[in-house]
Length: 429
Image 1 (cartoon, rainbow, N blue to C red):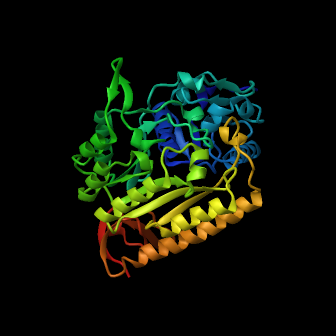
Image 2: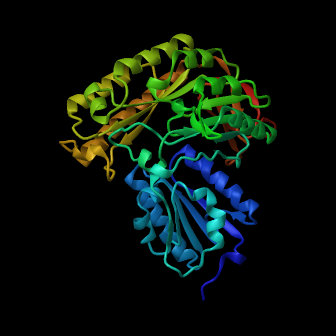
Image 3: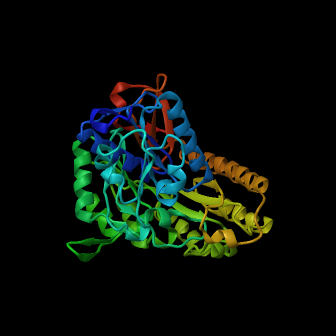
């Protein structure tokens, strides 16, 4: 017998993908809780399951299908809602998965409570999606499940056209919150006891685009960080990721002199070969990247620098890969996030030849991950004997607790209640 949504009380969430998705899931959860839903763990039986998907890798697509199958086995009468990037890109494909009841695209996900009211189990999957070109509103989001560190979304969408990327098709044009509203959200988070905010977005350095009262808004990321520095109660900020061509000298100098912005940058490189960067349609060359790393280290020798890199991109020869390896080896960076290239529908990279065999892609990934371990060990060893400030998280993991120094060195130590969500002077040894 089909059941209407009137009686629904429990909702469970699962997030695939990036920090931005985590901040949005947290906001969706608060919206439904305000509407009378009770949040429960995804491993429990719930009346509604919401899966917030990613489209960056093939794996995320597969994982979404596996999760739906798991729900079908455990709770066949429950409602299953799929949202996020995969839902925007391939709504029909998702709607055809047995057990899916509702597919919400980029424009509709924040209307989830309204959609659930009109949903009946047993009907065919309902798709609520529009052309990504029509998506131009910005919804601010933040995660609040963990008081220690919160992801605060300040920007969405991207105007870049990298040949490997589906994000502009999934999230639309670049648009942002206003500086004033981000500051207001930071004040709310401070009032909730949050100590550290991680600023997130699709293309964070592009912050400032948007409309207010029908007028085009022109603000900058530099203006934003200057205002956030003044918010009382927040002790730490991190910039989640910023394109090298948008990381200006004034941002680097500001972070170097800031009391609250941590000496930690995450800067996507994607390839150390200028030829491959050209094929990817990246907006910089390796020389600019090296210049930015050099500038950061000049102002902050202790600064952590993380790097995104893609291996196995079409036409990446052994020589190109060696260029990338040698370039990364020479750079004073702290760790690497290595991604194996995977084909995405409707991307220009599909036309680039020759295709790199999958086993070669995996081999290259392994080589760079080994380099990352060496980089991180070397960076950590440079700080032995120093005292740095560590913000400890409040989770008790089998009698242990974790925290990060200002420059992102992970510390694990026996759990002490008085250190939870507090900043402690810590000598590295």
